[in-house]
Each structure stands twice: as structure tokens, then as C-alpha cells.
Amino acid sequence: MLNKHYPFFAESLPYSYSALEPYIDERTMYLHHDKHYQTYVDNLNKALKDYPAYHSWDLKALLSQLDSLPKEIRTQVRNNGGGVYNHELYFDCMGRDHPNPSMEFTRILSDAFGSLNGFLSKLKETALGRFGSGWGMLIFEINLGLRIISTPNQDVPDLTRCTPILPVDVWEHAYYLKYQNLRANYLDSWTKVIDWQIVERNYSLAVNFD
Ligand code: MN3
Image (tube, rainbow, N blue to C red; front, side):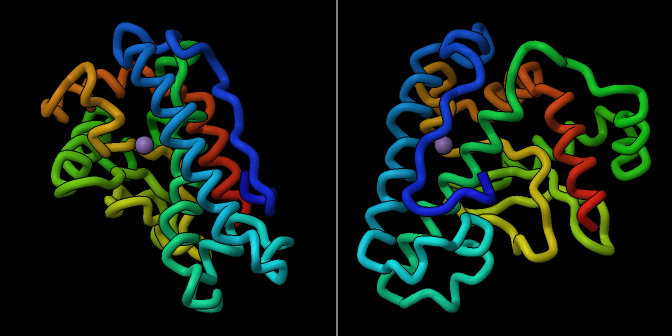
């Protein structure tokens, strides 16, 4: 994802639309991937189309150097590039194959957050506390290690020092069809479809790049 550049293409979902049933319904996954995510990809390309100087920039370069982009496209790249980045990681971190973290990763989470449940509660609380649309995220930050943060809209943290490990989408489009306004119920269900093998891979990559 991060080493791709213009024109960006949507990644296919790494499982079927119905794979996360009953926790996340097929229709939500279809709309979320084929409509919402696809639109972020299309609009990112549209923003960059007439700016060839940035066609070789990968997503991480674009998102971490927004201030050096022409101001006409800065907001479009921030919103749509962030949308591409966040959704690819979100879809990737879900699945039904690895519903539990390894002993080693459970220990790592416990060192940072007290216990696995302590981690999940803190992430849920942070995601619930995001007013309006945005994300809850486990990130790895240089010098600070694992942290839980929340970002508004499609913002990503400073990618020059933070690596997102596990994001959860709390825009209503992620849950409204099945859970309506009950964000907390969606978050409880989402924890059942985390693919921990992918999360642990993301963590190892982040730590080894540090
Ligand atoms: Mn979304």
C-alpha cells in the first residue's frame, strides 16, 4: 500500500463480503469496500491527475508531507489519501482465521495496557469517545512504543514517527446498517473479527523499522 503511487488502484478485499458475518454484515462490507473505499481511491487519483510532479510519490510520502503539496490539492490528498491508507489497513486487519493473539503478543499488549482486555477496553473507550466521524487506532510510535489514539475524519497520525498497527473505523458507514447508532455494539463485534496474525505482522514490521 505505502509503496504504490499514482494511479492508485483499490486492493481487493482479502475475504468474501460475507466472511465477517454475523459480526459485520455482508451488505455493509460490500458498500464499505466497493463504494466508500473505491471513492477515496478515485478521488485521490482525481486530485493528483493534473499534478505530474507528485505521480511518483507513494502514499506515505504524500501523507507525511502534506504541507509541501500545492494548497489546491492539499485537503483532497489529506482526506482521500488518508481514506485509502486507513481503509486498506482496516480491511486487512479483519478476518476469521486468527481470532486470538499469540502468547507473546498478549504479553506485549499486557506490558503496555495491563492486559489484553485492558487493551481492548481502552481502544473501545477511545473509539467511542471520537465525536463524529473518525478512527480509533493502535499505533507504534518511535520512543513511545504502543499507544492508542483517535483521529478525526480520515486523518492519519504523523507517519514519520508513528506506524498504525490496528485501526477501527467509527464512521457511521462502517456500522449503521446493522447497529444503527449503537457504536459500542459494533465495537464489541469488531473485536471478534480482528485478524491477530496480521496485527502482529504490522507490529513486527513497525518495530523493526524503528
Ligand atoms: Mn470507512
